[in-house]
Image 1 (cartoon, one colour):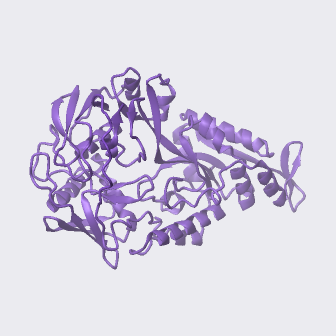
Image 2 (tube, helix red, strand yellow):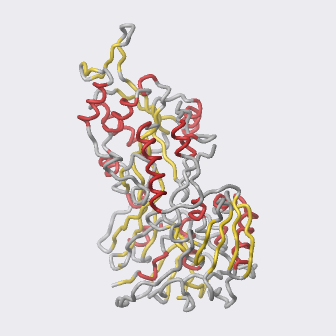
Image 3 (cartoon, rainbow, N blue to C red):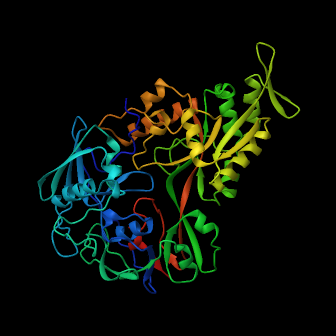
Length: 513
């Protein structure tokens, strides 16, 4: 049985297709200079060979994709003008925008899409985009503007995986140059030093970018790109919270958050006697101070969530159902209801044989991860306040993973980064992240693939059912989804609605003042 909840559909693309319509023209703000971005030195200029996030973001300015995934996890047409899904869900028929040109003047056609998929397959694991083809059987070109993608099985969120760059079929020199369809084109390139991008006057997927030139500095792979903003050499750069934490924010700097698919959670072993009753798991979840963890451990870069659904997604059930606020009184009430009593600060329960069971649990964490260890200490303190004793076990990563696989734990700090189609194999898949004793026919049903044709409302309803089962069973409890950080000069404006997919996509609306 398939263990992927297929959601986040393409209302704007399927069920008859859609077309992009430009919004009202806005007055171009006053500009004072060009943008300067930074990237680590690439081994190749071929976007399909990109390995560094900083390079992927720059390549996205030069190369377009069939779709991009917006802040709410909806796939939105880009090079694809529309698409329709066959009744059995096995074929998606695409229509491309007409009149799109490569930067060298050649016409963009469906053959380029077929070529790109073939290139990614040939690169295999050497391409970060290889896994995105896992549901694609073949690409079949019908004519210049039409092609079909046949699938290995129906998977309605496959479009969320199609935000990889499309490369030209007529060029074989992409290791040393860049030829895309994107809003910027390569103007000059000095290997290992810099490149200059110029506005693509032929770009028609939205209004042309306001800024004529984007300069790109190339840095050693060990370089801290965020520090380049602090010293005034770079306008903006995406970076990690670890880099931001040690940076120190100057007077000329700001940080804009954007949502990611990185999920941090507390896992339970339901085979542990103390944790098998659902009330105990609910009590543990309710006692966790997620706001403190987000602030103290993740420097404010997170959105609290117990369910593994991004709070910024349109499928999220909302905080009234997904209770993330700390509730120690409610947690204590649940433990009392389960038969525990607070004796000298410890929760105890008399067993049928007269023995006294003290609510004491171990918490497994890998010792190399300082943030996880700090998170574990806060959870230990939180649970102590409701009479649960927690022993934090910090072990080497190899020991950590082995013990998870063997089911040798009570609780553990875990994390994962979801793919854009939100696969939940780590719950009940063939190789779940931990052997935790969790079985649920209702969860298996909730994780089944949805039917091929649907609407926004039916997708939300299906996702709601999944979250309902998750919150009922609580095989784990989420802490938060982490935010990404765009570090930029204070003069940079227009950074609304940043999304993890194509972070620089709206660079045409950015401006300096």
